[in-house]
Length: 445
Ligand SMILES: Cc1cc2nc3c(=O)[nH]c(=O)nc-3n(C[C@H](O)[C@H](O)[C@H](O)COP(=O)(O)OP(=O)(O)OC[C@H]3O[C@@H](n4cnc5c(N)ncnc54)[C@H](O)[C@@H]3O)c2cc1C
Image 1 (tube, rainbow, N blue to C red):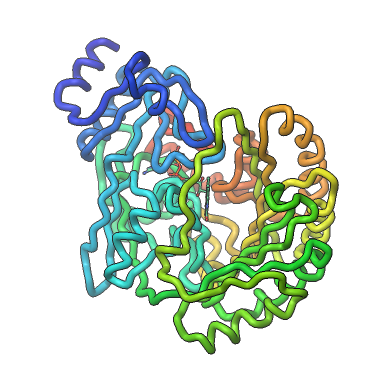
Image 2 (cartoon, rainbow, N blue to C red):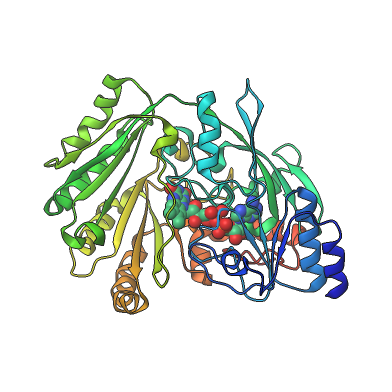
């Protein structure tokens, strides 16, 4: 270990943070994960990432990789191992103006990307939050406010620069290595550390965005009408529904429908959004034209001692009515989880199922439920939450890795159907046979 550490220290060029250092405590946590790593490394270059990987291997330590630090299971930290925190690799560069190609450092967050692209009237469909990392979100999906028009974040990826378990670096594209590029688009952090992502961004105008709310008593009809409408709505419209939010009334909280219409034509926007307004008694409607970068929410760190448990599911068309009825009943129960449902379909469903390792293209909806609070509140809510998921299970077609706090084999099987898993495992055997990159929804070599 000491010679490995000496090698690392000679010319690493970034921070090497160990227990006892002033910044250790902050550096060892992510927003939802606590850890006690032996080393937190903050490389400033690709060579630094390579040195960090080689150090972890030589020292025989486990490795965690951190992009934006927002994973629900807290993958971005560990105990007694090495954390490679990519936050200093966060540049956003337009590398081809005509093709809108953008190169983004592996540790950038989506707020940095949206702000850098806004002056060029460009955007990348990503997520809803500025503080979420490009890395974690993209490598397992990326369901954002333009998902129905431009697909998942990973559908807009054209190349990655990857440091593999042997410490080597390569630019991976469909042409250079089709199988590894397939695996990287959905297989999460299983195959190495992405030091740069190259995306094809899309031109954007300001977009119509806002919240339309309905009384809690209208939840079942609003939900079903919303899902039916989204099935045939223009791809320019992406929408989500949230209910049972404890901060606005729990079971009595208004039903919040968020809409994002990708365009600045007021008439077209009204035509797309009005059918949603007609679903029930509108309490509040603040849909207005905004810059795309302004619709992303600011990041928020939960206060100390607050836990968050999130589970996710995909729903195919045939199961939509049953699942929505069950979620509406859960939302009206005495101690409901927060429920958020996102429309997918559109561009996502028009890409071949096996084109990437994201295996849930035919799902119409992705939803997640969240229980939040101090440990006693979580313990009290957990049995009801588990029972809800027990009854939902037969109606679901899988789970979305990005909103999944569980890491059991069952969870991994819900993320990766058997054929996808087997294909990923073959790539894993080639690029990470010792499973160095295990801090994720893990594909075993
Ligand atoms: C408030 C909030 C809002 C969210 N909103 C959305 C949303 O709108 N849409 C959506 O799809 N998801 C959303 N998510 C889920 C989000 O996509 C996941 O939590 C994702 O894992 C976060 O990525 P990160 O880089 O911030 O996380 P991290 O914890 O840093 O990374 C998680 C794991 O991803 C891998 N990883 C990250 N970066 C790299 C890299 N450069 N190279 C290799 N591996 C890497 C590693 O395995 C790492 O351990 C949200 C999450 C939160 C907490």
